[in-house]
Length: 231
Image: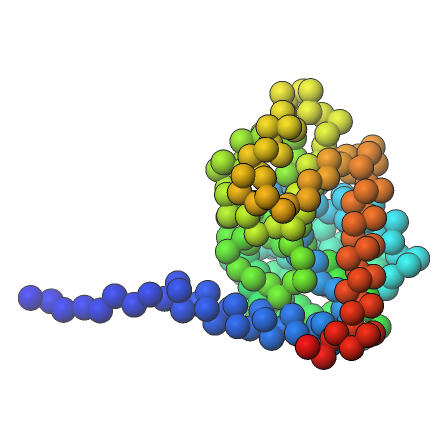
């Protein structure tokens, strides 16, 4: 009779990553660098929205971006044209970033003199939600063409995010997207989630989104300046 052991590798990996993410979050807090983890499906509009965000905030904050993809440098080229420090992270086939990958990206990017770093995670609604990157806040973009049922299909993603950006609202009528129903479904999973309808194409809702990000970045950096970064 063959004997074997079952090892909970997944649990161990997650636990190690959570510890590393906590350390990284502490390091960034001491530096006063606000790290935002931006997630969403391929084609949801992450990069387009990010360009608008940079345009709105680059005179107020020193901003940098880490672009994560399985391959290609298309998004990094787009972001670099917006005039901010950018690095491309290739995951070698992996569909997410974890804390160690984020740390490697930060080392290549350099954090000195930065106020805000945005990590555009790999386009995926499953794996990125499972791994803590060490970011101060998690934000996801859901676009109207994807459907208002996505909170039912990908509950973890909606549960771990602080903000839900519902993008392409200018096209909701084309795809019969029920924004009220989508928000209701998201709040069942995450009662505290902030929902901001936007259109990266027309600019609708961008001011509210930028206002939220500005406030979070300022509060984070004020906490460091007042000594909160030593916690």
